[in-house]
Amino acid sequence: TEFVSVSELASMMNVGPTEVISACMSLGIFASINQRLDAETIQIVAEEFGFEAEFVSADVQDAIKVEEDSPEDLVDRPPIITVMGHVDHGKTSLLDYIRKAKIADGEAGGITQHIGAYSVKLDGKQLTFLDTPGHEAFTAMRARGAQVTDVAIIIVAADDDVMPQTKEAISHAQAAEVPMVFAINKIDKPGANPDKIKEQLSTMNILVEEWGGKYQCQEISAKHGKNIDELLEKVILEADLLELKANPNKNAVGTVLESSLDKGKGYVTNMLVEAGTLRIGDIILAGKHTGRVRAMLNEKGKNLDVAPPSTPISILGINGAPSAGDKFYIMNDEREARNIATRREQLYREQGLRTQKHITLDEIGRRL
Ligand code: GDP
Ligand code: MG
Image 1 (spheres, rainbow, N blue to C red):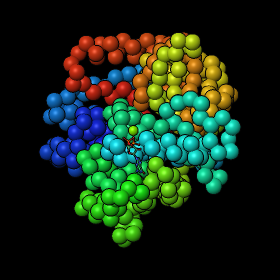
Image 2 (spheres, protein in one colour; image 1 turned 45 degrees about the vertical axis):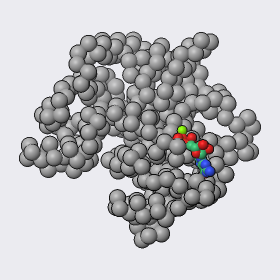
Image 3 (cartoon, protein in one colour; image 1 turned 90 degrees about the vertical axis):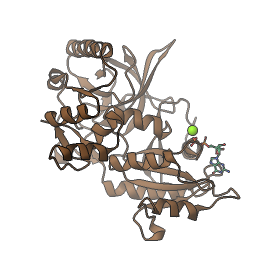
């Protein structure tokens, strides 16, 4: 069995994928960044970096049956988009502008609650934005082996430079093979120099289209909403190339974005349905927590009965707070769900008592 890819293992250990590649090479394994590694290799490589790899819950994997998709069940799904970039380069401003401009108009109420993601429509196309400015969300989730983004917008302020976090965002997206669209922001500012940014990108082998390269790039002002539609059109173009599809005709699977305890409502879990359809009453298992879906809300505060693929939702009914990046599954048997949750709880507790430098390959390696 192969478990995780080179890039996933690298991000779990917080090292560069090239370091893992060279560690593999020293073992005589010539691995590419997306190559999946077997248990023995993972163990040896992890050790080289001072980690102990532990493989857990094979029984859990057996209990959770992710249904196979037949081609006729696959339908188009909206792309999931993350905005990443250096601090203060305009991630929040961009997400805020899109949310206000694209949701508020035409739709009563606008956004009433933060659920970690939101959906917008442009020219009849639906887009799902992860609302947590990329970096934290993306790295936290990637560290757990979760990968929810389809397209990354890399935002760079035109009055600044390509910064360390910009580079990091680019290498995260590259490692995950997530296509990037560049947004050169703050072009309204007197000191803005978009060409300088394009030039700096070119030194990293990122050539924008205008310079004969393959990367789409849009100059914008997030603050004034300038050229945002143009940016989104480029994102749609990029997403269209991926021909994203999912099967809505099965039990939902997806990823937890965030969760919290609300005094009145109990545990509130914000999540993204990636495939299948989530329904009220479903028995859900998320990380080491479980429960029945009591209510589902979208970002407009509207109650939903069903949530198809790429829908961000907030649910009530889970008996605790799963972590960002935890996968969720629908179980047929409530008791079995509870048993698995309890077993996981024990595993995590035992692990917590052991060394900090520890990676767990629980569930990683399974694919939607
Ligand atoms: P983040 O740290 O990447 O989320 O950046 P923010 O969105 O919080 O923006 C940082 C600062 O830059 C804020 O003061 C914004 O008002 C400002 N800002 C963001 N976009 C623009 C823009 O297009 N033009 C100008 N002039 N300021 C901007
Ligand atoms: Mg911000």
